[in-house]
Image (tube, rainbow, N blue to C red):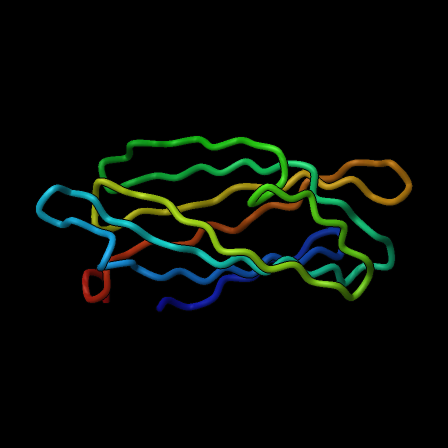
Length: 130
């Protein structure tokens, strides 16, 4: 388990937690599987609907995967003021260490759109980084 990262914008706070899934990984085949749990909280005064996501996943060889899609885990959650939404997803790297960062596109209850950046966080097999 790694430390939690947190970033706030437009009243939206995005927190991330990472776990290495050794039982799904195959180190001999350079397959390293990680889950990440995201908690999105609306500390603002207006409701906001998560429309889409954009992830940039980089491994230790500087190979970049970009992932774009509607919503998260098949949902486009509406976060009312003081509400949170949590989900868990995963990614696979060819190296023991990598990073993820990205953004969510939200639509405010007045129809305007804004982007909430997701601070870069580290994906690492335990005991690889100190």
